[in-house]
Length: 186
Ligand SMILES: CC(C)(COP(=O)(O)OP(=O)(O)OC[C@H]1O[C@@H](n2cnc3c(N)ncnc32)[C@H](O)[C@@H]1OP(=O)(O)O)[C@@H](O)C(=O)NCCC(=O)NCCS
Picture 1: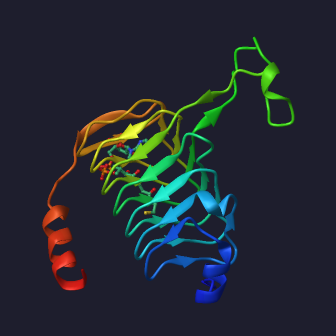
Picture 2: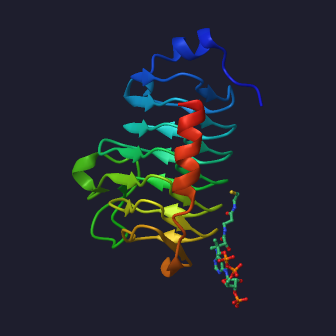
Picture 3: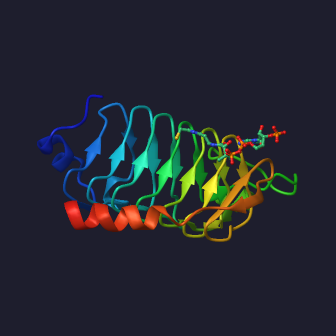
């Protein structure tokens, strides 16, 4: 994958950037002054990242993802993953018909929901899943492919479906591997 070189990364003007960060030259980064990205994290081809977004260490945002932080912000805690074509957004129009909708219409005619999103440490979100505004994924959440997450999740749990439901516990074994990884690579 063609990643930006050190000079190109520097020229993006990010709020902060860690070491060994990789951003594809085919990713679109809007509002770079609001984007923080930690060590070893990676954003792949055809992702769109906008608004207030804080990406921890060892985060992978894979191809075709939409990360729309808006004003409220999205936080990706360390070691979390967005699989192919996942959508995470903090703002949503009022679908009831009471107000007008969409970005071409001034705010005074709309009633947008705006709520922050927190993606817990070691969470993984499966391909083509959607995370609604206001959701907090507890640490170690895994979300199956093509799920719709409308509510916050319990830690160390596996969810899937539309709307996403808790299916079973998720193993914590990976924490031992995390410790080994940190001991070896820092
Ligand atoms: C949710 C998930 C983790 C469950 O895995 P699992 O525990 O091994 O579950 P199983 O494969 O045994 O499936 C259990 C049942 O749930 C169904 N199921 C599995 N994943 C599902 C999903 N995302 N949505 C709806 N149903 C699903 C299976 O068809 C199966 O149904 P059945 O009992 O009627 O046969 C996995 O299926 C998944 O969606 N992984 C994400 C994969 C992905 O997006 N990868 C991207 C690259 S990292």
